[in-house]
Amino acid sequence: MHSAKSSLSALTLGALGVVYGDIGTSVLYALKEVFNSGHISLTPEHVYGVLSLVAWTVTIIVSLKYVTLVLRADNRGEGGLVAMLALAAQAVEGHPHLRKVLMAIGIFGTCLFYGDGVITPAISVLSAVEGLAVLSPRFESSVVPLTLAILLALFAVQKRGTAGIGRWFGPIMLVWFLSLAGLGIWHIAHHPAIMWALSPHHALQFIWDEPGIAFLLLGAVVLCVTGAEALYADLGHFGKRPIRHAWFGVAMPALLLNYLGQGALLLQQPEAVSNPFFAMAPRALLLPLVVLATAATVIASQALITGAFSVTKQVIQLGYLPRLQVLHTSETDTGQIYMPLVNWGLCVGIALAVIFFQSSGALAAAYGIAVTLDMLITTILTFFVVRWGWRYPLLPVAAATLFFLVVDVSFFASNLIKLPDGGWFPLAIGGAMFVLMRTWHTGRQLITAAMEHHALPLASFLDMLRNDSNVTRVAGTAVFLSSQAGTVPSALLHNLKHNKVLHARNLFVTVRHHEVAHIPVSQRFNATDLGHECWQVILHFGFKDEPHVPAALYLLASRQTIPSLSDMETSYFLSRDIIVAQRGHGMVLWREKLFAQMYRNAGSAADFLHLPHRSVVELGSQIVI
Picture 1 (cartoon, helix red, strand yellow):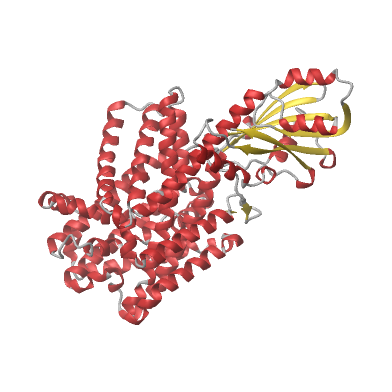
Picture 2 (tube, one colour; picture 1 turned 90 degrees about the vertical axis):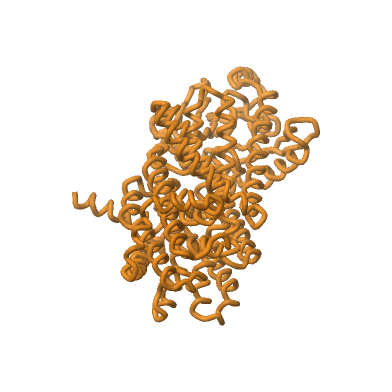
């Protein structure tokens, strides 16, 4: 029992460091942007109304929607938009047109993650470093260069992994949240009546009295739920209970206390409106607070970078991006990965955002559209999971969905106003990613169709080979990787054409990725004896499983389903296809050329499937799409 409690405490502390980094640093800029938006004057009624809006936005979106409802939709223990998409797709399996629409919506939501992933670290680190300008105006010119230096250093250390420093994330964020609570309590004590701002009637009164201004302010209020999607995305790392305990026990109380403290400060010192968070601290503690805030924003950015690696790997295994180089940074934790292209792509995007927008205030105009659209997509997918997958009654499911849709649409509509001022930036990134993903997915379907058109049935082909005296059997085992089970791999055809040999034992292996997070080992294999020392093997992996083909084959051999494999006598044959784009076929020509370029630059299949390089033979072929 004591061990279980210790484990829960450790996971809760870990969740505090990884899951709540973004939302924990939103206090740096949320209220500042609301009152510096130019839409509202600093009066007691407005302070109470805005604080009530913030408190109930956090309660409805984070506590009710994500922590209470969405966290329940785990895909075999995993969370995130990709996991939710897979659950929704399974729920509507018998409705192909609806499934196709949901897949497109879900993939677009995943693409928006990259747009949000560029904005969030930029605005977080900038807002922390801007605390130096509160300390002294002399530092104002150093804010952007220092922000860029911090972010560059963060991306530069990614290839070394975060296992060594990751253990400090939880304790540092605990100190951060305790500091937020302490600062808030100190100012609330000078104006206790500010606690009444927690009553929803202040928000409702504000909306009733000034509906137009309230609607405009939603675009800034949404900043208080920055990173809410991380709650669900990190489900697989920590589990539901630690995430919920960290939220209700530490993060939510600290955030609300700090927002109330900022409100109390603004009522007493209206001049603090330019940067109310840092104005809360006594001058002697301002520099340590800036350092702590910077550390918190770096931790929040680290969590997002790690999330980008994980999401990209999942999308690759679902077939929406080409294989990319994946390096493991830990010998014990397979989840610790580093993807150079994703890492430096994010770095360039974030650096451009900092250079282009120059301040957290300007970046606030860019933030909101992508994240509110993602929240809207999550609500839509959750409806199909709860109603179609879990078979809950229609009336309560529809009522809850309608409630969250009204909230999500209101925030999204308000943020659309910011489109010309920077909202286009994350949408452009998300749109570009969507074009790439759809092009890759469609291109792969065209390749499959072209291969099926020219495919030969494997069983009858092997029967023909047995009677061909020109084919020589040689010692050893050949493993032919093929995307289509039951058909002759092009690598086999080329091997016979050029080498005129067939190995003594032949395995025809097809790897399939499924829309579930993990496939149990008991369900990972299908093996069929084709006779004459030939076997058809199908390996099944979830989108979070490591597709380690040799390990799977050795395990299958240990069960005596296929012959034992020897490293020295086993060769792996792959097809290295060359894509030829032609006008008038599946996609418009520019997309086919884009796909051909992506295909040409895709990572090695041998690396992706963990094949031993010294035993891999690649044979080329040409495919016209």
